[in-house]
Length: 418
Image (cartoon, rainbow, N blue to C red; front, side):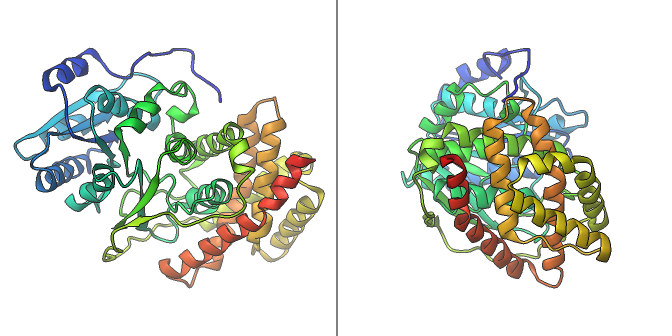
């Protein structure tokens, strides 16, 4: 993992330390990482505080907003959002590498210093959060049922493409648990896990940008903390078109995923199959899912142009049979304008890239960048496959793909044995 030049021993400014000294300890902390979220932050702050007051009136609670230096009125609106009496609030600009991970670092530092029993973190762009979300994410921690609570919600079939096509199936196949939203953005952690995160030496790397969610989930799975899922219903937020907005996030998430494979190599090599996680609560009533637009033409253009640019590298990185299949896919696309990209081939291609990441001592970011066009191609093929399906039917396609990743894990293990 590549690191920045400037290092900070803490993500917290002195005024936050003074606030911590004033309130001394709390039972439950809600952390909200944010950047330029003026349209939604007030609602998220108020709703989180309502949840704390409604379900934990007998406990000492606080809302902590960790801002990345927003250029709009995010911080002002976070301060002005109405909250119930008895709920502490602090809004601050964090210090360190710009990115969501550093915002999390400051939240975990506050949780550690205030000796919080449970910390809940929610995204600042949520429009579907309810007060119940705070209870659903905190209760498993408070009741000693878990050390880490992952969200379980229904999303639009085009939302979360990096999760659906890379992070979920690989995490499931590698670490043996069917954690459906390993980079969901909304979660709960116990005090010991928050303290563990703070002491890890990752805060000047890509983890501190967008790799934080998969790092936290994978760490919890491999470091002895019980992970559970909790039903939250539908997630409605400011979703992004995978063809237009996910480039830097893709690089940082996938780089972190591959890096963690090296860290926990001895663990995942021993696991042969996956098991379901304990799931808290009943499925929530599903509200109307907002559509997420996808620029299919742009996806295909990125796939085609990327293949043409990186063709020689693909021939080096991929197993010969996988490269030949990929080449035939591209030939067929250029003839028909349509794409077929089977899940088993996609799994083996990701495993080829993961294996090369281990061996490649050159610029690993460059390696991950060359994977991006293939991700666009697989996403385009999926969008075509689920065109006439609703989000629940599309979820079945995602599950079948995840099962294929498990079946192809033997292929990955054989590469390492050679």
